[in-house]
Image (tube, rainbow, N blue to C red; front, side, top):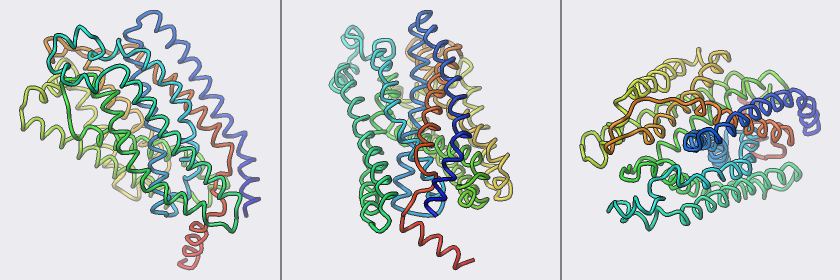
Length: 406
């Protein structure tokens, strides 16, 4: 069985290599355009680059937390996509490198990085112990070190498991790592979202902000994994695992995240709007005028309402073209959501009044350049290991249970 899986994975490498080369070509073209944008408009370059970075960092982190949930919970859905998740986590070194422009652009992005702004603002003075350049850089480095350690161990012990047929210790280590790993993920991603995104408007704060960002990462990851799963569902060795039932499961997880995203987003809006405090309500005031309201309505319609209607039906989400279309739509809307969150912070006057909706061509090329490189690396990593995890005793027990039930 193991030898057959390895042979089937080897036979799939030319197919996966095609997507790797196409993604790399797209990423390279986008990178050339984005670098040109740096010399044309540096301020806009860093704004658009931040958008692309916080979008694509969501995939390796989402892969990591879903992988850890699988190691704790088990389930055939996890074994069907485990190698996809592991390949996603192994792209973190690339994202660590791609974080460097964010560190280089601190002064172009963040108001709190300017001494004159701090001197004139009592709130910034109060927050300066946390929001300062050295500590910001140190925290960003620490995040990637912590995430890198977890990703390394998850992949190392999984590889060890592939090579040891009768030893269950790698499986146990993966389970023991994943419990605290989920907690560490929640803490680090919460602080990263505060640093990279919420501090764009340092006068504003929300205690649920990190949860919204984490749910968005999970939704984005489910959508991407479902899209790749549809691509591989008819090809061995995953054709035996990615059945219609497994694909429906992925659609169900997407539905759960769509509804959870709507719940936490509306909860934040309702609490802040009801409180009506100037330091809180201004964040929404900026995003409800000057054309930004239309983007918010777009999110309600295509990030929540339409996906929910399509995914709530088992019959509809079992149709792979519809599941793929919904996945693509949600991936696009995740970028729109992050754009709606970040971009208005740069286009305000008088504290919170919007100067109007603005969309720059770098807002397209920056995410495309980072995304092309990330997807290329993802498919490269996907080719390096068997597409089905080998020698996991839980998987054999599940398969035996399904056969006995059948």
